[in-house]
Image 1 (cartoon, rainbow over the protein chains, first blue to last red):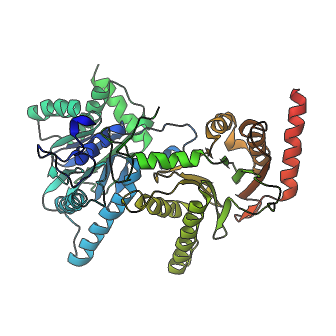
Image 2 (image 1 turned 30 degrees about the vertical axis):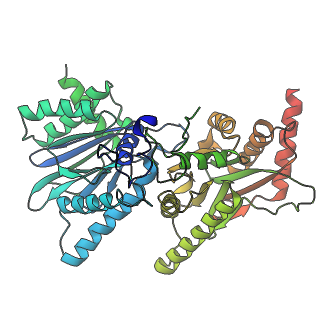
Image 3 (image 1 turned 135 degrees about the horizontal axis):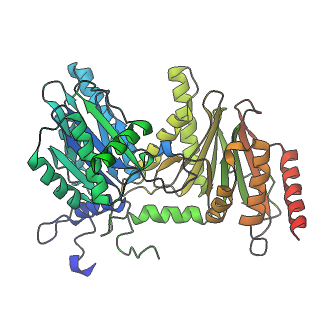
Length: 245
Length: 249
């Protein structure tokens, strides 16, 4: 494109205004996937919800997943280019296991997020590589700090959140969550799940069926990472629908 | 039109302004130039069928294979650049062997699929190598878990399928496949249905030369081993397809 004047072809080239266009295009690639993810951290739980889009009825739905287990108590939700997902998951698992082997305790979510952030930054500096077009949401219950929710983006920027929205409807979701969290930020488990799912429904203007979303929940009582089954999701969706009347 | 990528389409490491990677999309086009391959996940196994265009009468039938075995229990069908497909199969065989040496157990299909997906992905990350220009269908049958069919595309996305088609005629083939009741179909019936789709729907007799059918299966009948479908069954299937044509006339 002539407006960028050829400064956007390679990752190692700054534009005259000091922008790295290739990194910005990687962000665009996340939105291209057309999926929105919402994560909410309560006072003793973390809930992450993502859209599940099965484009063809010949596809086996259970193989289309964006939620991955990194350790028993740390989960990861990836939004963006599906092809980059498996490699990032493998890297996260490797970093987590190496830490546990070396130090004898489970890697804190914040440190895992830092490590993957640093690795993502490296990919923005070498000309022979490209950034992963993924928004990496890491979540889990930390022994010391309690519920944790972190996000790492293609630029290598990573930070912890009380609630986040990423993907196609990032702006709308974030605005919606900001209003709610301002009113009340220490949420019970039930409130956490309901906020996450109802925000996603509101932002996308749809009422979901259980097989259109993937919900993952970790609580201090039950810190083991798991993706909720269709029946459990259906119960929650029904409750939300009732509350809205 | 998929969009002009001029200037952004030279390396797999370059994103276009709307966030696409054109080199990987072009790799998909390489697959679309090749002849069609179909995989069906039936109730008692997985059947593959490949439409092989006979380029010359001098070519020996049954050579230039597009379907391969990995270990004894997994079959892989390729579409796209055959040589690229062979490289991935070679890697798959290595993975299967390593897994067996390490765990003394045969590699489960979902583990192999994930490893191959990562292998394919790595080739889309650097500017000094090119993505693979082929799609693979991976199938296996297990006594407990039943049949499984996966498809890996050049962008490394690996999904499970009930029925899948790759190559030139994939759209028409997929339309026909979605009409079939795969969960109730046996492998023997699938052989006939695949022959029908490849001969009637996908292969254009006026435009292209003759075709050869290469079919393989891994099912209850073969006791979970991946084998070529017996020639007799293929001939019967072709006869059946011709019979169907005559009925319709």
